[in-house]
Image 1 (tube, each protein chain N blue to C red):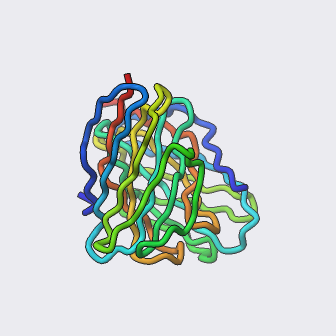
Image 2 (cartoon, rainbow over the protein chains, first blue to last red; image 1 turned 90 degrees about the horizontal axis):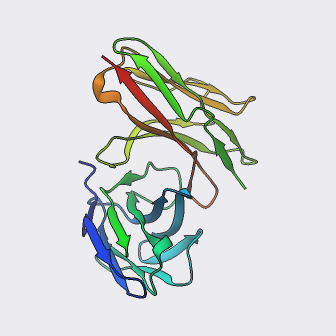
Length: 114
Length: 113
């Protein structure tokens, strides 16, 4: 158990809908990262937050947004869902924001868009 | 942009034997970090080992060790005394200047009893 929690574990929804994925980092970690793992694109970095502020953006679609709250948990919002958004979404956390710390991953949220 | 290449989609090894998984990367950074993560059927992403590029000594964690060849930009993972529980997808990753992990395509490791 990495200490990173993600809810829900599974999510089934329809195209056009909006969902929110939640992540709680390990105790003491200030950074949260979101990754998408899909069959066709592999693992891709989406976005990084450090202590409530956005630090870096990767291949994140405009339909997707995220935030990190004062208690350091983070939410990833996916809207206008398409079939291609079906994937495993991982959250990871690390202690600081220097980039030198190891990222520890949550169990992921498996999203299926029908 | 950084890239990570794992050229072996699948590898198999007899239980108790040794196997080496290959990884090459391309970066213009002078200070970077390399990782091997394991993803078993549960899909949980588990850190196996980490290497700081400025360290010449190869990282070791119990039965897992790396062969880090900086000039060749190679970062292979050696698993000794393979166990059934080692069966998983193994991903090589590098950390770029934005602190994001850049991933290889993964190698599926099969352990034969």
